[in-house]
Length: 373
Image 1 (cartoon, one colour):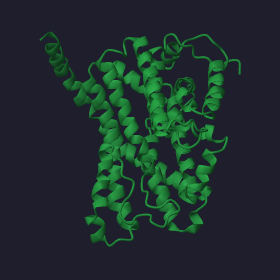
Image 2: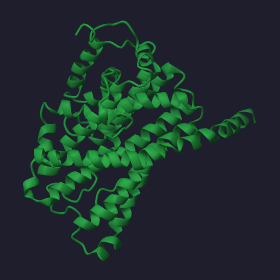
Image 3: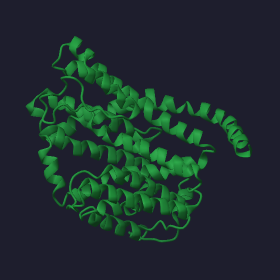
Image 4: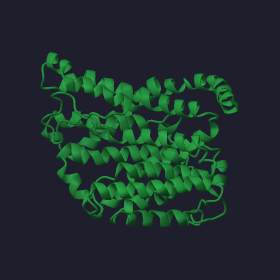
């Protein structure tokens, strides 16, 4: 406990202590991915009524922490990637090879394996359906949840990949950060904070306009704009890492304040920096890795495949319509498929980084000539 509350270094110093590879982030990614499956088990086992009831209760604050923490974690780590990249070409290229290969394969598996197995349509009707063709828009982040005749009788009907709703916001995060970096605001630290404040105000205005000015109690899913703000909050903490203490007391206070904010009207919009600090503090803890985390990151695969597997399990029969049955079956299956995804898709795709780095000098010359023209 004394070590937890010790204040003797900044976040930057803690990053250096861990060699820039703090294992806390690996644990957090895996734990958050598992928590998403546990949360989705309620909808896939019982339909929308149970999770809706929970999100209208005080428990909502705890559930609402999950995705903002995921995005804040991503923002902090991606900011490091941006700092190491000499050009936006490489930065965006790294994001592309991390996201799209695995996403594309998951979409193809859903469309050509899961869909035909569970559809109530004939195969001819299934493959000729406009819904089937539209499903491939998922590969580019234009989300389509349904496949023709698939999961029609599930407690949560007609949804194959409900988790993909966050993908467009993830893409917005990378584009927004690239644009902000492109105008030099990332290096001007307080300019970045001003942009974050402006975006927060705009997000609140957008929310109020969409709700005709009514400020309702905190319920339902965290707005997608809050996820983007959480990502940028993670970036902000990275930018100011030399000035922000790595302090267990601040982390404890952040946890309490986050739960309070996620329980009050409009509190979601004011929570990103607080949640971001808590996330980064936990991420910079450095416990020993257990075998699942050695040289692998299965969290993305668990996120990608978990929901479709949950829906497939739910389609087997009524005996699977209990959240704990769903989780007990889906977690090991998701972990196995995530491992296959990592070793045969994601990790090989990361090998393409060498081509991005090889092209970087060319892009630097192009930018230099354009700047001097």
